[in-house]
Length: 65
Image (tube, rainbow, N blue to C red):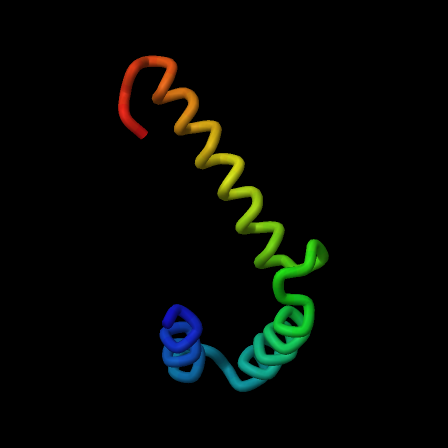
């Protein structure tokens, strides 16, 4: 779903050269999906670490995460 939304907005608000650059970038990322070298994989991992840190901090002050 998010890729569909991104595609919708990319077509209407980006200049053609930027559209092509984004398409090339997404094609390269798609080839590396779920591999440690993928941006989206690394981004997901960093968000999980931040989530876990926040959950542990909330737990320490007896709040539900």
